[in-house]
Length: 480
Image (cartoon, rainbow, N blue to C red; front, top):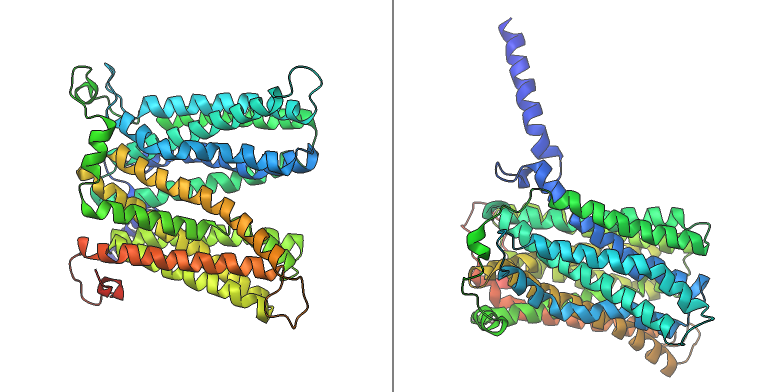
């Protein structure tokens, strides 16, 4: 009987430990923030991912192909949400210093962002249909309606995400914060992947009525998801939000934030690294089709490969940071992985190696995910001198602005270079269309090296306790 009881005890112990070992991010939970509540909190990233897929993917194609809207006008409309990105620091500061008798700081801003997303998505299909075939009213009504819809949606996304990440940082314990941040980004990718599959299925038989139903359904889903996300999450603390308390102005908070000499260096590294990883976002699939002659189905898989690589980067970042690794060191590792990925893509053209191209795409996703998580955590570490909302908002403002400018620059550089070089045969050393893509990829490699130089001296700011057998990475030896 004793051996059987001992076996039962071992089985119980195994099942008790299976959750943290087998479930991703299960060890991010704490008694104060259990796994169910943490997963529910991260659901606001689903609504952000769903809106991102609509704005930059589904509606982008629908406007150009099905509705026949000029490409230049589509590019202008889609770029409008980027105009809000520099204000993320202000949004974060306002949530830090919010005055209310209810005792909430983050919830009002997440809710306001939700309502703005809902309003933008609710009027968006009608604005697009008016933009396509306007028969009455002034000519500017269609473009103005589309711009308003995209502006409201973009502003709501930035507001909800900034305040949501700040709330997650407020609630997470310091030792589990790396895992929580990685989980937030995984949920964003899950939301984007799920939304893209659902939208592709619903819009397979396109009609104006279907477009209205899908976009307005996304508006309703945004409100529902964020209500579930926010329910009983932020504890009320009237002391934090009492109307008579003294709060610093935005300029005062900014001065405090940048007192640390490493702050500006970190933001420069974020800008260069984010631009370096993002410039190719709209060029990967065309590169595979034009240069490597891949089919539509083969290039479509590139998004899945990139997403899988990004998830690997997030998972590795969470595991390494939870073990005490240096966040700046890991960010530098992500940059080096990105350099290897872009190098693989550059060499795939002369070698006509499609698998090398796919491997490069995987590495770009992994390096970008590792870099994003680690630099966000580095920005959060600066919150000791400011506050979570301002620190996250400043990081998000720099990252989103750099990504937007890089996306636009990537297409312009590619077209300009291809216009200057001949579309030639195999004997040409530099010929279109590969030349334009190659120049963009080399610029991205240079940007990643620039970010590596900027972030190198910051490694000494965080030195975890030495452990036997720990892996040493030589980024700390860069001249500081």
